[in-house]
Amino acid sequence: MRDVSESAAGMRQAMHAGAPQHGDEPGFHESANNGLLIASLAALVVRLARMSLFEGKMVSGTSRTHGSPVGLGPDDRRAMSAISRACLVQGLPDHGAEIHDLLALCTRPLGEWLTLPEVVQAGLNHTVLIHADDGIPTAEAEELAAGFTGMTAAIEEQLFARFVDVLSRHPEGQANTYYTKVREFVVRNPVCNLDEFKVGLTDEVPARLWMIIQREFYEAVPTGWCIDGTVPICDHCGNAMKKGRAALVCRTAACVASHAARSSRSVAASSVMRVARGIRQYWVEPGIDELRLYDALRASGLPAELYPFRDRVDIAVGDTGIDLKAYVSPETLGQKFRRSIGGLAYYPQRLLVVPDWQAASMPSYLDRLSRAMGRDDVTCLTVSQALARLRSKESGYA
Image 1: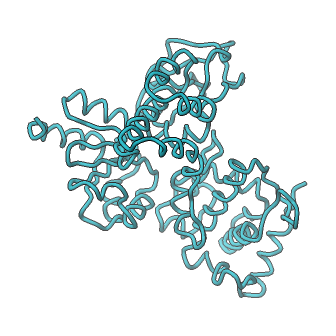
Image 2: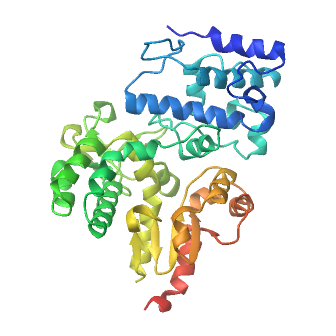
Image 3: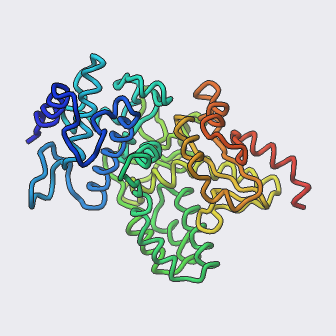
């Protein structure tokens, strides 16, 4: 049963009292005014995703009690109350009153339903917190949550924990090679049959490693993906297609944004596996553009390395490190790199690269990204600009 009253009641109490009601997190109820409101919402999304993904618990609208395996905790209630308060102050519907409704709204751009000054000022109008198809927090949700007091967004680390553990038992050089081979295979084969899996991996990596990939990274294709009894496969990225408004469309967002839909083959659902939902988001979606750039660099004769040193950067070309990111909000991406440039620090030449389709979706994307990043040791480019720059230096790598 959904408990819709508690968060709204808490919100109203806070409004009437005019002061925070929870001393263990000072200033939380002022989050609509101090910039923490969206971070608290993102943290709520990440907390519940962890609970669902790794603890196998369902999301319930009831309050968690001692000994109860499900339910909302105090932090969740406070986040919902803050959203409720902000909505009512702005004359919006009480979006924070019920957790399932709130999570459903988080699959839509914030600017469509949470029209608050904080959203506009932070450049988050087009930001989505939950991937609609996979039900997993987006990269932007995790980045926003990482800036919230007491919140560490580590879903990706938990998702790949066993894989990383097995890799760590091999000599570093071998582990690095295995990582690249596995990740490249998965990105290139979001849907594959067992024979393709065996040919692509079993001769390249140790048996224990490929068994983990087969069991944890892939799963059965649901019969709901079938169209006229089979699963149509995208000619561009190899993922499954689905019915769109007028025709078939690819299930990979990066592919949809760059190519006209085309499928020339279909397979029986029982004969293939698909990548699991977390793998789709963390590897396949960003990997589509990473591999496009990598393939173009290799075709140009450049010594590009894919995911060197177990993903220190996405691509390295000599002394140039490349991180490719597809964030809807240039401000959120800029803040991420303002805080840390990660593995780019190992390279003298550092490129933060954005897919052309992503940059074209928003006016002055690269300019806004550079301003938000606020540093001059990283260059912001689109994929096509990065490719042109590196090709012009080709003679230097000969």
